[in-house]
Image (cartoon, rainbow, N blue to C red):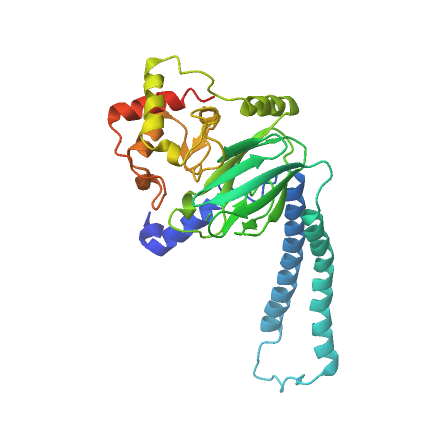
Amino acid sequence: MKLFKDKKIFLLSFLFLSSCIEDAPLDSLSPAGPYARSIDELFWLTFWIAVGVFAIVQGALLFSVFYFKERESSPEPKQIHGNNFLEILWTIIPVLILAVIAVPTVRTIFDLAREPEDALKIEVIGHQWWFEYKYPDFGITTANVLVIPEDRPVRLEMWSNDVLHNYWVPKLNGKRYLVPGQTTYLNLQADSPEEFWAQCGEYCGLSHSKMRGRVISMTEEDFASWVVNEQSYAQKELPESSLAAEGQVVYLNAGCTQCHVIDGVWDVQGDRIAPNLTHFANRSVFAGAALKNNPENLTKWLANPAEIKPGTFMPNLELTEKEINALIAYLGTLK
Ligand code: CUA
């Protein structure tokens, strides 16, 4: 541990080791779809060209330092200032290298921007601090967890409801801004069924770091049944368990409906400023994907949302423990 006596060395080695973590969910160097792969290929091509340039330049430098070292008998070195041939040569070489890199770079930029045929359209709306997803073809509104079919291109049409955000699923594509009053586009495609992490990539206020997301790719059949389930009302009748029924009363009376919608309950239509909760129990995460969806986390969240996500617009409703337990039982029925 003597080596780590110096705090800086310790922190630096930690930073270095953090780049070696296996299966890091936000690792942009392990692409899982064609768009991310084309970026990855471009990265490695550029990287190895840079390594080659580095090796040649450093090699020539080190060779010169030792081979042409000043010795006692050394004559005055030949002066090359103003040598036109050399000036032109070391201008043309970098220009050629940049031109070679520019060809695949420009091609990749255009490939990534092109609208794929047969793409599924999904709208992504940025909010402080969560992502909302709408499937206009299916009439579905959901939040935090984006569900897509495997091996099929998805065309995201994105904008922001408030400030600048940035949508980033490192394993599926690069980043793209979500801008208020302007639509931006991003293509995603996943090779196989998997769960991916998303992260807001632009500082957007107090809880920016907790503005995360999940993207779940499913087989064609699983996706189709997910769509059918999402299109139905999770709740057609009063909940069976008495605790859940109590929870619905809390939901309707404590103020939740000012901001949230559960389709089919209380005839509330249209958008609200907070996530649509219709199929809340099927989502693996909540609160901007900052928390796993389980009773323990829900208890913490409902007791004091701002403690989890500073600046959140979800107020502390001063719920009692009993009300919180009932609400959690009710939310658990929304499948
Ligand atoms: Cu949204 Cu950072």
